[in-house]
Length: 177
Ligand code: S3P
Image (cartoon, rainbow, N blue to C red; front, side, top):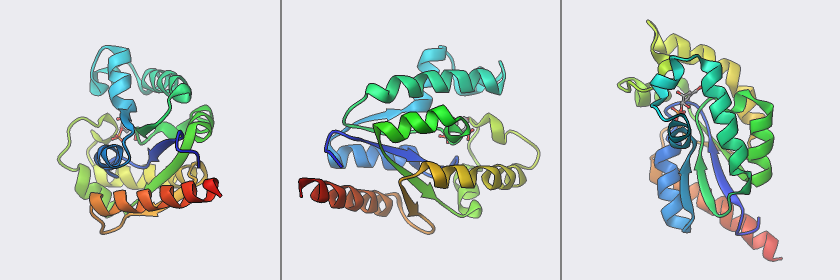
C-alpha cells in the first residue's frame, strides 16, 4: 500500500474505532478524522439531536461526509457503526484506503457501550437484544466491506493498534518491492 493511503476503521458501536484510531494516528503520523464528529459539525448539532429528525436524515449527512473524505490523504478515519448500510459509502471508503474491520463478540461490545448515552439506536428497552439483531444484520456487510479483519476479542486497544500497524508495514514493504 502506498504511504499516502488512508487507514479506515469500521465496526459495530463499542468496537473502539475512535480509541484505536487516535492511537494509530499518533503511531503512524497521520491526522485523525472521526466521521461522527464531522457529521455533528455538518449538522450543527449532536448525534442524538440529529436522530430526532430521523435515521435517514443522519444517514444522508453521513453519506455527504464520507463522499467528502474521498480526497483525504494520510488520514486515519474512524467511522460510525452504520456506515456500511449504504453501498456508496463502502465504495468510497474502499477506494480511499485500507479498510480494517474491528470484530468483537457481542458480549464485549455490550460491555463497552452499556453506560454510554449518546447512541440513539441503543436507546431501547433491551439494548443487548437490539445489539444482537443489528450485529446479525451488519456482520456480512462489515466482512465484505473490509480489506482486513482484525479479531479483537479480549484485546486491549494498544494491541489492536499494533496489529493494524503490522499489517500496514507489511503492505508498505510489498509496495516498495
Ligand atoms: C451508529 C453508530 C454511531 C453513530 C450513530 C449510528 C450505528 O457511531 O454513527 O449513532 O448505526 O451503528 P459509533 O459506532 O462510533 O458508536
